[in-house]
Amino acid sequence: MRSSPGSDLIVTARAFSASTWRVLSALTITGAMLLSRPATSRAQAIVPGTGQRLTQVGDDFEDPKWNYIANEPKSSEEQDKQERLPSGRAANGRWAEGLKRGQPDMVKRVPTPPGGIEGSEGSMMLRSLYTSVPGKFSGQTSQDDFICLVEQRLGGKISPSRGPNVVCHVYIPPFDKWERREGNSFCFRLACLAWMEKPGGFLGMGTTRKLDEYWPGMLISFHPGDGKKTQDFASINLRAGPNGGDFRALDIKEPGWWTLGMSVTPDGQIHYYAHSGVAPLTEKDHLSSQFPYGYKAEQMITFFFDVLNGDNGQWSTPWIIDDAFVYVQR
Image (tube, rainbow, N blue to C red; front, top):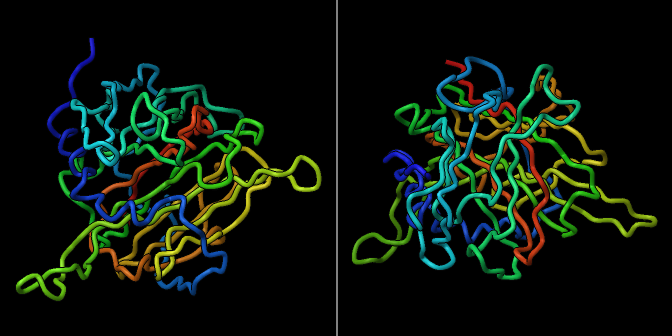
């Protein structure tokens, strides 16, 4: 028998419903990338994975009883206004479905692939077939969202003054296992609040200043080769530069484990780090530091993962994640 998620999970799902995702469609993950890297500043950068780990949030997936309660069918509020409660949730209360787009169709604990963290026996797989409306194929690239319940479990957001940073290990599968589609396949992202100018004001004219959400992140994209001169490869693209455009940070030519991290500094800047393997990140792994869209983070809400496919009857690339944790400097 399926169990219903608690009220905090429904709150989380609603937090990712229309009111909080209303601009995300304008920032579609399949948008064009800017291949030239924007200006970057490393002032006060924090290496992800350093400081005090917040044990209330994140996951190492080592519990053999780790389980996800899907409560299908999943939500697709963005496409057809259907939230389909109760939403999906992890049995340990650390993860939940976002109601705007719904959860990946496959969420399960799997044996850690070779080369992973020493001693790790379990990781989490995310994979999707229907990324638009459940049971229907749109034929257009779409995504599912998988949310870490940071704000709910901590009882509030995290101030940039604490130097929050997030790290995770992601397994890049052999390229013959990928969905044969050019474009983004997986995203590791933050949800933050920033002051923004919004339409409105007196008599509906002009603008008003308000705190609203934005979602910086690290996107893994596939570039299929021709089987002859050009080989398959992937790339890590960053969201986003000061004008909101994605840009390529580095290429991935070999499959295997990678370590990804993001940090938020007291000045509201987002810092991006990555390297191959599962060793701790260091300063040399810095990719870029940005104020995405020109915003300065006032609060960090959570982190989450996206899984994408062509929503055309082909399963997405299988994504495996291990040791996804949140740290603070103070």
